[in-house]
Structures are given as structure tokens and as C-alpha cells.
Image (cartoon, rainbow, N blue to C red; front, side):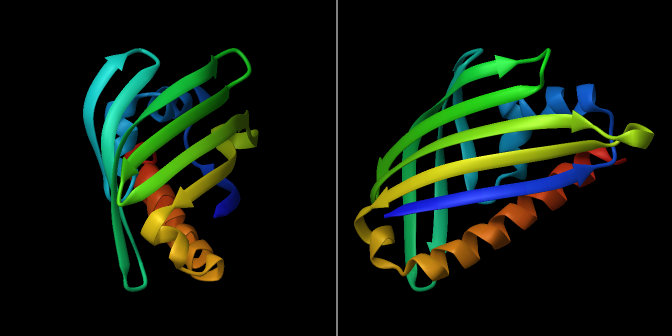
Length: 148
């Protein structure tokens, strides 16, 4: 089952600080609900685990993510990830940061996630609802780290 997610959010922090935070796996994983970082393999590859509960279905995945693009000059990022566990999951995500007047930053992200196994049995509408809620938790945590 394919899920598309497109989100934009604002952070009251300068773009360079937001970029540094969002490209640091050890910091960003703390903002991702259900995620744990197992290993930073090198500057572009990480391994970890993530658990997700959608309605009555709970799934845990162990996998890796690769920063395929880290364009600091234009503040663009592309990440791909794969995981196995209670089924399979893969993800492709692209993001871009923009400076706003007053020193704030706008972050725009688009992701395509494919899930198989138990999670694919859950309806796409419910998965979308839960992914929206998880994203809001992520944004809230990012803001609490950067807007202090």
C-alpha cells in the first residue's frame, strides 16, 4: 500500500540552525515518535528501529536510512529508507528549507511510503490519519528543541 505525505511547517529559528538539527540523526530521531537510532554508520547512513500503531495493528520495523542528497547551499535533502519486521516498509522523502522574514524557517517535505504485511491490511484513510498525528508530534518536538 502506498501512502503519500506532503507537509509544510514553520519553525521560529534561523535556517542554518534548522538545517543543522534536521540533518543530525542523533537529534532528529528524538523527535520521531516510536523511533530509535541503533547506529550511525557514516555521515549518510543510519540504522534503527521504528514502531507504529494504527488502530488495532501494531508494527515494528528494523532498517536503515540513507541521506542521498544533503545540499547545504540550497537547504535540500533527500532520504530513502527500508525496513523489515512485521511486514516491510520503504520510504522516499524530499525536503527543502526556506528563510522567512524575521529569521524564521519554512520546511516543506514530501514523502512516499510503501508498506506491506500487517500494516497494509489497515485502511489507507486510517493510516493517513495516524501519519498526520505523528507528523504533528514530530513538528511539536522539533519546535520545542529549536524555539527555546
